[in-house]
Image 1: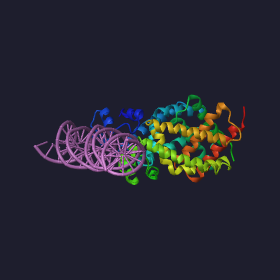
Image 2: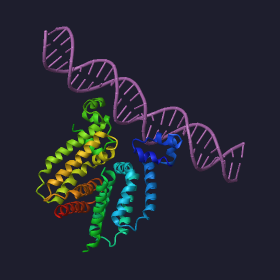
Image 3: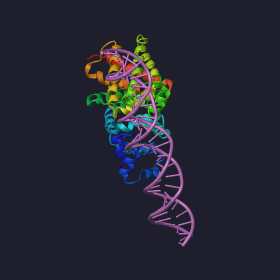
Image 4: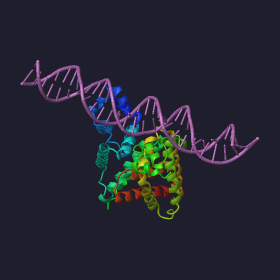
Length: 167
Length: 167
DNA sequence: CCTCCTCTTGAACAGCAATCAAGAAGGGTC
DNA sequence: GACCCTTCTTGATTGCTGTTCAAGAGGAGG
């Protein structure tokens, strides 16, 4: 279903099931045979994007953390509509909520795998969350290139010092 | 219009203009005399909440920054639906977009006013944005009490060291 | 030929945000 | 009292939305 382009480009609410079906060359009904819901369809699109992202991520794991973050932000900014919609609908759609927590869990593991030392257990969750939220803000808000670089640097710096300052 | 409770409690999409009107004891039409749009109505509700928040904020400015942040998060978490909706609709509604940028400008000024020293100009925007996004994440995501405290501490700590490390 | 399963569809449903023309309520002026 | 103007409210309507349902097409296996 390459018609996911519509959801990414125009957003969730501006993309009706009719338009989606028209773009796919089928009747609006047909979509409900493949997806239970419009939210279910959104999850499928987001999940597909996440998997291609994780596959590409292997190409930058050698670079410093700040660069990796910048790469991640650049990849996710084109789908900021999806990011915003997921956050908006997770309170209303269990499917999206579940996918969202899974997404954050995945991010946590990726972060942990790229740190030289593990973060002390009592600080780990908050530190990782702070970095994640900083990057999420950089994706969803309209910030210029310099600020984006600054945000990635801040998130990486904070995470690195948390990973080296033991005890 | 105390019927703003519906928007806060049930969210934007689950709250139809009909329900809103019914709660206010008028016909759905009548709302369109006072507000141009449903988005316009949302902005009015959000703006009213923002003003009461700013008025109450004076009572905690004496406390340390981390405590102020925690207070802010506690105040905004009940209206997380509004926060998520604003972020979701600013791409589609100019009124909401404008209000959103104004909100962030206001936050920036509040942050700046509560720092002992000004942050160097080349870092200020990114540092303030990082703190803001960290707190926004704490509001909109389901994190436990300990993590919330940790996030507020991280945001405050980062901001304070940025404000003291000159040159 | 019959049956089962996969897939697609036209028609219909209730609900939505928004519009429009019509009118009620009230005050100011002659 | 009769006129007008402004402020506010409403019933009726419009085009769209996500979703459901019963009906049927197409092919595979026995």
